[in-house]
Amino acid sequence: MIKKSFLIKKQSYFYIFFLISVSFSVNQYYAFIGVLPVDSFSTFNAGYNILNNSIPFKDFWTIKGPVLDLIQAIYFKFFGVSWYSYAAHSSTFNSIFAVSTFLTLRKFNLDTKFCFIYSALASILMYPTYGIPFTDHHASIFSILSVYSLCLAIKTKNNIFWFFLPIFLFLGFFTKQTPSAYFGLLTGVITLFYLFSNFKIKILLSIFLGFIFSITIFLIFIIVYKIPYQSIIIQYLLFPMSLGETRLEWLLPLDFQRIVLRHKLIYIALSVPIFLLIRSIYKDFSSILLKDNLIFILLLGTLFLFITHQLMTINGLFIFFLIPIFSAFSHIYSFNFKKKQRYVIFFVVFSLVSTFYYHEKYISKRDTLILRDVDLNQAVNSKILGQQLENLKWITHHYPKNPKQEIQNLLDSMEIIKNDKKIKMIVTDYQFISSTLSIKDNSAARIWWRHHIYPDPGKKYFVYWKNFLLEKIQKEKIQVIYTIHPMEGESNIFEGLVSDECYTNQKINDILVLQILNTCDELNFLKK
Image (cartoon, rainbow, N blue to C red; front, side):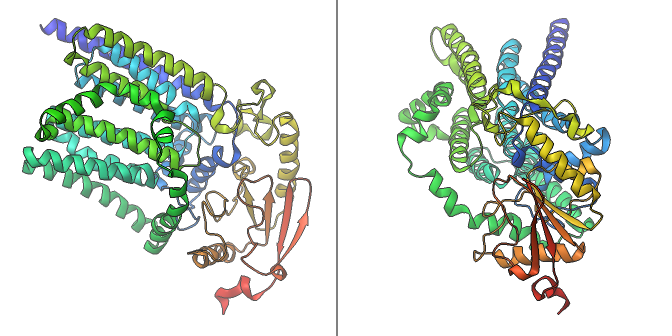
């Protein structure tokens, strides 16, 4: 018996090692193919700025959580500022996602080889959609970890999982508000249902300790770096909430086509738990409090929340990573049926085919980078832009047929910026420039994008944003502002903010605009 147990553990270690290798290398490969400037460089630059003592909320405006950027700064600190260490960050989290899925499925007594298959397939569909560190993916991973933690808390009765539950939710929320906040509500409701029939003071104590641990770390962060509470509340809570009505329009109408048919493969993957839940409740409604049924509700809620999040976001489709996970749970619970082997074969094949389908349709074509119809063979090595970008295959939707021209335009503009010794602010979606030139970009925003990242003129919280930007200009004693086009969501940061007499526009080349700041009351409002 001891020898058999040892062999099982040895086998698990082998699978985990191979799983890490697969999940890391697959994401690392796709992280080097293609660029969507507004998304690809935002975390890169934020991590670089934090490494150089620029603090989120305090020194640059952000509606994204600081967790992703702080982790990136740590990667840059220990592994150097490069695209490799940038990609390694997301590849590591893809591996964490894969291994946590594997270990969770093992706790549900799924055969090791099937745990590996489902986990590997899920990792192929998770982070490689973008490849590089991205808020939606990190927040989704933390949300999934909270779901796993609650499932295991219910399944194993081990209090350590109750302790980690609020920690994962907290990390998720301060990566991105959604879908993390939704999962906070979902796991909170399921926890209350569980405690209704399984109340133990140790459970509440474990949850409380996990919550206190998270809050303590957060308070230490804002106290050490002297971040104003008002900045966090307005940038991270109030302003994003003011955007809620616009995002709600993207969710509506709640029709069957958009909610179910468009995501039918995910529903099929979860079909066994859905069926068992409905059958159990139909026979006896009080059975809703049974442990397996609570897990089923949690999984179904996860499905609905990710679909809701996908419909309300402007980012690319990526939630198909749920298919292998849900297929695994359908596989696990198929023991409730006769001829179980047929279900096992179905869900394994279903996961394999759907993974291949979505991989070919979205990932290999770099769909989320808006490169679906672009010939990726036209990409060129971006090392010429800077050593930090070595081996990145550069091609964007801005110059799909002539990436060399885009690179040359950037090189010309970077040379001009480098030779200008004035104190400058750089406004661009190409946020690798400051690290390449080893200068401060003095950016006042993590991403330059009106409406979605900071308020439009005349809108709620616009005055706060205006003061934030102008204070940044005065604090850093900015003399000139360079704007590099094209940009997805901005053309002139001063439009609607200050009068024309406060600055002079000069078009330097096809993509570069210089704004020279003049003396005016609006730019010197702090001195009054």
